[in-house]
Length: 193
Image (cartoon, rainbow, N blue to C red):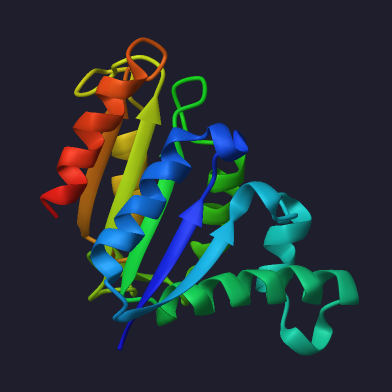
């Protein structure tokens, strides 16, 4: 049995276009054959990347304070869930031309040297290979293939950096204008997966 990790990051709750579409992606690719782990990043209280967090990662386990251990354990659990998944379904709405803070925090916690990537003589190498990602990008305006789309290139870069190079993007662009048309376009892409 294959495993899916389903990650939502929208702060819009039931009004979220990306949440609606990630659920449709999971339903479409699952067909009852895969176990699914769901994480609502907007509802998680994840530690942000600061000096203390980074220090926690680089402190030997036996020398960590209880606060450092709690941070490292949170990161380790997120990485373990990601490693166990064969398929990643990720909702990434565009806020102010970039990803939600919650999603950036997630990437900060799962991108760790020696665990999800390593430095080699030829540069960094991702360690989470043999995975497929489906990324739903939603935006109020239509920024596809434009210089001010910082969401799609960033997510592809981050996933590729940790070894996930098979990335399929489903876009719901222009939801502030014609939401129904944006949804229909994205749903057509999902049906073709």
